[in-house]
Length: 165
Image (cartoon, rainbow, N blue to C red):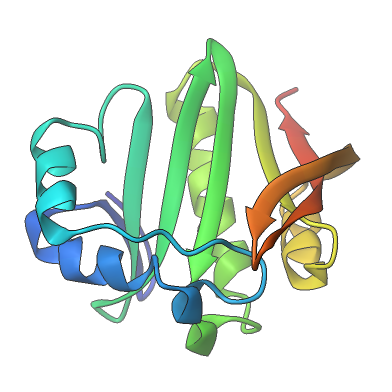
């Protein structure tokens, strides 16, 4: 668990599965993410099998004043390389919460995991996410052509990285 003021990030638990389902809807994901239809039974199975939080993948729930408001996904791609995704409810965007959460996750991983490279990607049109990544010390490396499918088509993304000194 990670905490900073009223913000807490914690591994997904059984009681968080309804929120996790909600966070996969198109309404919640917004303009730059694909919706993912999934059942509660599938999520329960994945949780029980350690697929939502385990050695190679973490699903963290972002709580603000004890209310779930976001999801952080952490992918342990290979030794030294970790990929991070931050998704917040629309009501929490544009207030600096994403930057605070990304700082928390970045710092935790750099201090506690054998990592030299953190990666994130975002839609080329998602300027707010690009600014968040840059505020947290990530640098754009290039364009991933037709990388992400959402809203009926493939979209280009920027690849961002943070390299440990």
